[in-house]
Image 1 (spheres, rainbow, N blue to C red):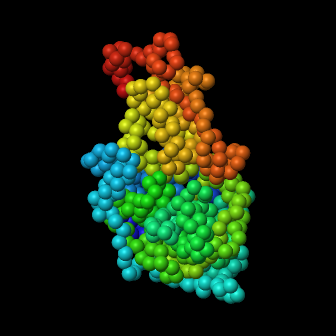
Image 2: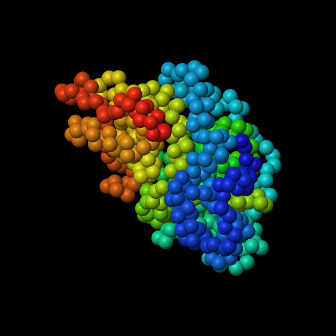
Image 3: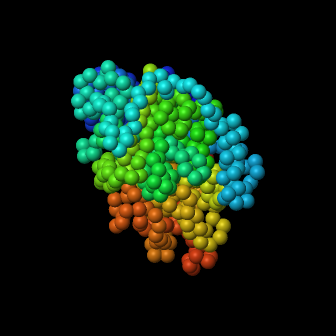
Length: 509
């Protein structure tokens, strides 16, 4: 189902008993993080939280803060209007099987067609609630300074001010963070050569009332767009929106094939085309029902600026590195805006459920390229890219290694440090079961492989930024041709008839 605003989604969570409301004032500086972190680590991800009176430097913000809204399997399914994410994945998989592709290129074409079958293509409208309140800044010329706006560190009267970065309740998440960070920003950019749009998610550090960092990592699509603007020497238009339908941040983080519009995926999942509206100060389009929109540009003629530290999804702080500076030209928002955010850190966190839903949804895509794949899991301890479990129907020697190399060559899977391949009967979502088969079925020297490739820029363990090594484990049963010359023993299992008799005798299930 489509949600007309993030408030609508919050209300749906409340009605379903999935929301805790916190009415007393709570500081956006560290305190919301501490409460949310405890909730996220409860069994099953805890509940979503709505802070009705968040404070910024002691002043109550006019906007409530919603957090952990996607932090459970149930809430992820609710955001898609489904009983389960598997239900949505199975439906997409059925559409993709209508005409089996013969190549990866054809698979991408088929995915685009499958998404379009629901009339999910975004459409442009002339008005939208994201522009209920508008505050434009004059873009500075070389000799012109910005107009004075409230200081983010002096907020005594910001409730009476136009919308600025000062009165949006942006969190300072962890003690050593370099400042406040927008943690669920949907960043819209456009390729200056092809005009193709991209929707990504890159954390946004607040420098002051009119500038932020733009932390798009080296391998991201927006970074590629940025390099072209830098080569051309042209200002790069950028739009950041927050809120609206919960499928927007999900689509921004989903591993969509390059060249496919993420708003197409969002429209498919919400069962309704996304209505897009042109920004006030540039030609980019954003969802008309977004809660907040921050418009601006990046100037390729100015130097990069250190961004960070930031307490990251790796469980460690990302240390300062130079990134482009984003200049704000306008901020708009809904009258009834809710500020959605998240925190990342030592797992499990909300992002585990978002990433797990992405894997389930795109599993049909993986299976089209690798039909032997049964299932894939990204355990919470692996913080997304570090560890992947994959089960396969093995039919020939060295098939596990084919899967390792294939996955390392697919999109963000290139960041995976460790891949463990197991047989079809192993439940990859049960880490204990996978570790049992890993230690039981491998000879370390024979059944492992090292290789090199791109690494996540957030990985602090690599000797060089964005460059590292990877390791794969073949934990499948060994067959002739794989250097194993002994008989493979059977796994211990009780006789089926005995099990049934005991269960009936003692009323066991």
